[in-house]
Image (cartoon, rainbow, N blue to C red):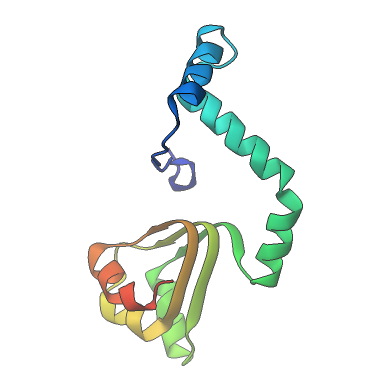
Length: 131
């Protein structure tokens, strides 16, 4: 499975009546299971707010989707004397072979709405720079 296709687990709390209604719709065959219902509901809400998401992503200068930072790319950033601000709505990843000192030298800040994946040392080093 591709990295961008992996799912993230969330927990929600519902009152018993709402949960019962979900279970009824599942029993009646409208949805395969509770997860199918929740995914469908979330996608419908996201579709209804698509314009707001698009405008906000543009205004905040974020990458929409997936952004991967390789060791080579970050070494080139360091060689050029620059830094990067990671701003992603979706999935941001830093390669497993990126050492913490390289991440600290090249990554100014991290703002990810969605999922951020990096090795434990890099995550710890960037912790204070993560919004």
